[in-house]
Amino acid sequence: MKDMADKPRVGLILAGGGARAAYQVGVLKAIAELLPRESPNPFPVLCGTSAGAINATTLAIYATRFHEGVRRLNHVWRNFTVHQVFRADVPGVFANGMRWLGAMILGGLGRRNPRALLDRAPLRQLLQRTMPCDRIQQSIDAGALHALSVTASGYSSGQSVTFFQGVSSLAAWRRSRRVGSAANITIDHLMASSAIPFIFSAIKINREFFGDGSMRQIAPISPALHLGAERVLVVGVRYENPSAARAESDEYPSLAQIAGNVLNSIFLDSLEADLERLQRINKTISLISADQLREGGVTLRSVDVLVIAPSADLEKIAARHAHHLPSSIRFLLRGLGAFNRNGSNLVSYLLFEKPFCRELIDLGYKDAMHRKEEILRFLDMPGA
Image 1 (cartoon, one colour):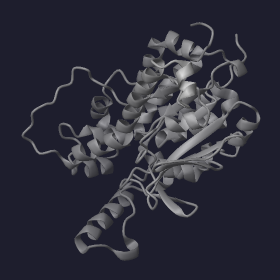
Image 2 (cartoon, helix red, strand yellow; image 1 turned 30 degrees about the vertical axis):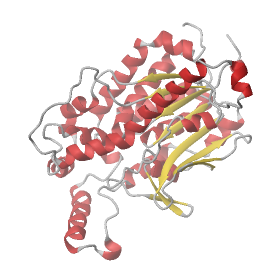
Image 3 (cartoon, helix red, strand yellow; image 1 turned 45 degrees about the horizontal axis):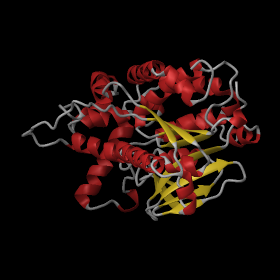
Image 4 (tube, rainbow, N blue to C red; image 1 turned 135 degrees about the vertical axis):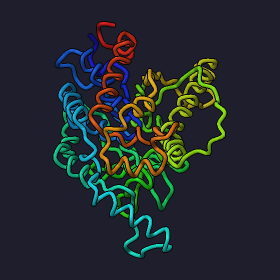
């Protein structure tokens, strides 16, 4: 077995997707089972966005004990309830709902304008109990972690900001509408990165309010490369049906269907576009000799990528489990058309309930195990 220092540095990219991020936990559970019990963290570079940022940060905290980190993630996600993420009690839901309605009818309520549809105070409390972020630096100092990044979107600057914590040699970066900024990752960064627009309130970090990191994140793979990853494993949360065709419909789309498509464009489309771009760059580089690349001063390099994505439609799975949502949330979503045909996509982002999360974990586990030899080769581990 090679020494870890001799292996290519692998980056793990965990994208956003609300409750869909349970799928990532299943993939990680499979990877943990494929590796020796005492094996070190196989992902020196961890990059998370939105709910994926919470998963990535958990792995960073327990980077010296990879199996323990995965075990804790699995325990939390397998036992999730909506009440641990946002207020789903009748007074909490309808107080916010009435304020939204009042603000729209009256043209605003001044200082009492609603900030979001749902109150995430329970999630902050859960993270404060279970996420000792001060241990991230301990993982770095122990050599088990090269870097962790959490991406959020600035509402004032319009920039995608990747906050990173890692070894001292890492440098900040600036590109068009996206920057990398060194920081000590805290609960505020996780809350900001996972603040789905309109649904959850923005979080102020330093001088700016930030929302979900998937907004404006036009290059989700880029942070891993800036932080030194030489190959990347991407865990997606969308099922691609190769036989899907554009269906004819005379029925006007519901608000839930429109919202679901908006969330898909925020969470999923940019990752797929970035993967296509990376594949084109890899192909172009392969056609140019190393001498020509040096002579032309080309700094681009080929990057190996492995993508694991759901083998089943998460929207259809959500439709089967939507009845597990609390009655107050079902009432709210029913008014938006979330329980009509084509409306369950929105539900899939908010369905933090055990039956749904467990089915996604099991699906991720099955999909990863189906590709175990490929994963072991990619991680340069024995057994492939």
